[in-house]
Image (tube, rainbow over all chains, first blue to last red; front, side, top):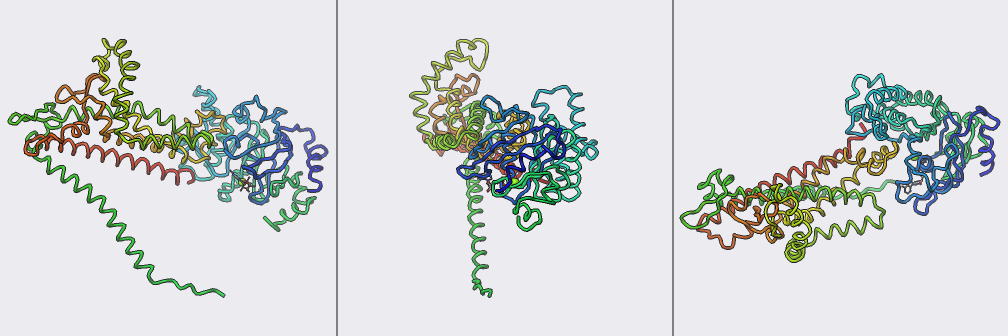
Length: 271
Length: 322
Ligand SMILES: Nc1ncnc2c1ncn2[C@@H]1O[C@H](COP(=O)(O)OP(=O)(O)O)[C@@H](O)[C@H]1O
Ligand SMILES: [Mg+2]
């Protein structure tokens, strides 16, 4: 894939935000399901406090790649990850590292909203805090409120925090899941098509949320909606059949793609 | 272009035949149960007529003609005590086994599940024989005597001199026998918890145990209770091994007081005495009456268990996405 490596090297060096550091770096990452290579030798760097979109036709390995970034594949029995993933320079897959330590720093929002169904709204958000030993009611209250505010769902739920989480609408559930992920104060937030199951209004709210969150967090979002990538992200990566084809500033990917495939894809000619 | 497919007109009648035969098969089961309950009721009628509700509360068990007096309370209690003890021992073990198997790599979980299922295939009489010839002595030497010596004077449940053929041995054997049922169903239920739920917990930095606490147990609670109750159903009805191990006391002495005392359950008293019971006396109606109580208890337990298990499997469909 011509020019691929160049684009990656160029990112940020002489373009926007050049003063920002790299928060996360994926180096030569390959993922195998049994013997099938679903992600092929992908190298990408993610700037702190930026939003990066992963786009590409379905089945191209976006989810698979995203799940490497917080070691979610550890739980998939037939998956194997190769390569290095650095968070602030530390290798996530280092032998002496407990994956739990990193997962707390790398939050994740899944494609389908997955609140804990038996728990109240409050308990869902507090779950991660309690897990990490926070017991003080005042601190819990404070962080729960802050997280729900950050996820732009506070106004809709503040009067019934005791209500079971599954009684919320799909869009509210998804923002609740964002709040749950934010409550443990991650540094990176991974989102896998967070709006794909939602209606346009809920989608718009999620997008506003993402834009706000990018002031503090490094966000990596998978989306199949190209307008969404344009609206929310600073950088965009285009993947195809497990390869990273092109990675650049979002504007450039959509207005002057270097690769033929990228160009066809963003024009909607396949996918 | 499009081809005419010759749909057969026989489709509708076949559907109807299927429906009718399914209904016949379904009602057959119901009819059998109703018939059994009816049969047990009518055959035990004399004892209800004679003892009334005292049959449920009395403890005499006297088959001597002319002085007949029957009460099933010790056996009802014996069943409840052995089954509860079996649950106390068996449920946590089964849940642990199910947790382990659901997390283990394939090369372990496969063989292990098969082994556990084999436990369920061991005939009850084999457990009984093993119980009498091997297990009894082990229990006596390693569990019952030590407990008796340390606690015998102060704690009433350990107060009688151990014998090995007693309520405690029977309960432990029962626990072993219900483990396959409970652990197999629990494993199914744990696996049925959606992966997204488990990942939500891991995402928050949960360890495996915390993942179970956060994602699996709350989600699967009804199902796991149902699994346990299925095991309870088996424990309540189990006969052969219990009969061989429980020591077979009758009358007031069968009232469970100490774990180390011989006892009797509803099923074991029937197994022990039905051969010698004369149909002309009240002895046989009394045993049939015990059978009726046992059947009603077992039906209730199984109905509750199935409701809980199937409700759990329905939750799986609907709960996550509104
Ligand atoms: N658990 C799995 N086992 C085997 N193959 C998988 C598994 N998950 C995903 N795949 C395969 O890996 C490829 C990439 O999938 P995925 O990352 O989900 O794509 P995307 O998110 O871009 O739609 C697909 O071909 C998919 O079939
Ligand atoms: Mg995907």
